Amino acid sequence: MNILVMTHSQAKGFITTSFVDDQMRAHVRRGNRVRAIVAVPQGKENSFDRRIGKTIVRQEHEGVEYVFVRYLSLSGRGEKNFNVRSFIHVLNRKLPEILRGFTPDVIHAHTVLFDGRIGIWLKRKLAVPLVVTTHGGDIVKPMARGWSGLLKEICDGADEMAADSSALGRKCEGLGTVKKVVPVTLGYASNIEVPPVERIPKRLIQVSNFVPSKRIAVTIEALRILHAEDPAYHLILIGDGPEREKMEALVQEYGLQEAITFKGRQPNAKVLEEMAASSYFVMVSAPEGLGIVYIEAMSQGCLAIGTVGEGVADIISDGENGYLLPVDRPDLIADRIRACEQDPDLRERLRAAGQEKASGLTWDRAAAEYEKLFQKAMAYR
Image: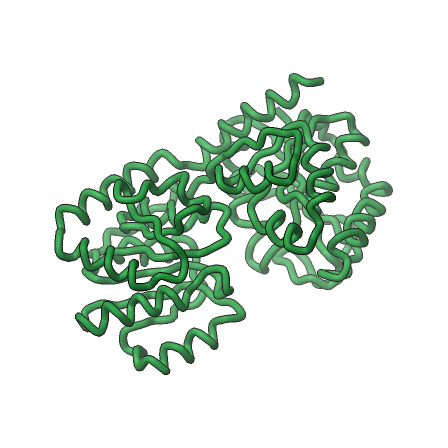
C-alpha cells in the first residue's frame, strides 16, 4: 500500500511530531511505502533546513520518504484560512514534483483543521480516499473559538475519521459529523532497550510539557501532602514549556527544592529509564486526547494515575491497572498513593496489570488497525 501522509513540522529535534514519525515507521516495517508531505512555515526552525530555505527539500529516514514543503504562514493569525490557502497555493504549483515516482492509494491527514483541509484538497485533486485523525488540541481549541461548523465540514469531507481515544472520538462526533469516529490507540516505542535500574520507593514522576492543561501544580501539591507525612517521597518532573518558571517558583514557595527535581526535556530512552526507576506516574491533565506517556510509564512498571473522563480511560481501568481521578484533587492523588504504600500487594497487582496492558499497545499494532481503516476507505472507490 502506498500511504501519503499529510502532516506539519513541530519542535526542533523532531522530523514532524514524534508519534506521527513512529506511526509512519511502523507502516514501513509492515511492508508499506510511505511518503510524508510536511508543511514547514518559512522562518520556522527545523532539524532538516535553515529558517528560510528552499521550497522543497527531500529526506529519507528509516524508510519514510519525507518531502518538506515551505510556505508563507501568518502563524496563529492565519490559522483559520490564510495558512491553508497559502499552502494549497504552493501545492498547486509543486504537486507533480512532490509526488514524483509515487502514486498514493490513500491519504492520511494528521489533525483536522490544517492537515485535514489540505487532505480534502489532495483527495479531490488526486481522486484518492482520505482518512483524517484528530489528536485532541486540533478540535478542542478551534471548538472553543466557535469554529465547530468548519470542523464538521472537514470531518464530513473525509472518507474515514479516527481519533486517539474513545473520549476524543465522542468530542468529534459531538460536532454533528455524519462520520462514525474510530478510536485507534497510539503506541509506544517498545523497541527501545532500557537498562536495568533499581525502582526507587515513593518516587513520583510526571513527563509533560509545562502548560496549564497538564496540571503540574496539582502533582506538586500532591507531593507536598505526601512529603509532609514522609520526607522519603520525591517527585521528578521531565519536560519544559511556558509554565516552568512558575512551577519552579511554586516549589521554592513550598520549600520543596530537595524533594522535587526538574530535569527538562530528555531523549525518549532517558525518559523510559527515569520511568523504570520510579514507582508512580502522575498526570491528571485535561483536556487530554490520550497521552502516550501513560503507556510508556505503564510499560516500565510505573503505577499510572490519570484523569477520569479523558482519553486515558481507554487504557487505564480505575482500580484495576491504575487510577483515574478528577482534575484539581491532589488530596485524592495522595490518598491513592498512600493506600498503595500501605498495601504493597495492591500496588504490585495494579502495577503488573498496567504493564500487561501496555505490552500490547505497540506502534505495529496501531499501524495494523490503521491499515484496516485505510482498506475500508479504499473500498469506497
